[in-house]
Length: 132
Image 1: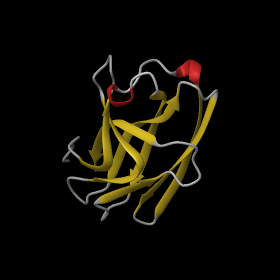
Image 2: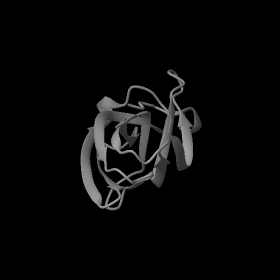
Image 3: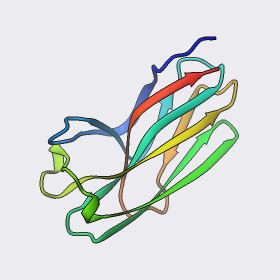
Image 4: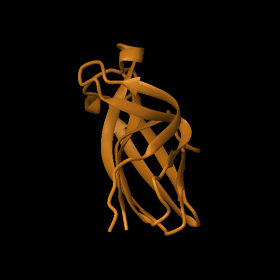
């Protein structure tokens, strides 16, 4: 069995936690390119871009892996805002951090993401791919 965690992240922007220095990938869409087509499980954390002045943010993340599609919804509040993005100090930061697992079918090399119908952008991090 070949197990790997390496993926290539292709998103519109990369943000950085002002305190944690963690990298967050996202905004309105993007993709993750997998290291092989053996299938497996892609896991990551899903964050809302939470504005300091918005009481609540409702987002949805649409995920497509070949013919497999799923939608993950997340509602966050400004109380969940633990730090700001270095790039948007005192304005926006990550909130939520919901863990998500996507079963990737054999033969699929790319997983696509978009946030149609969301109030703000999304951010993803902590990607791990465990192939079959």
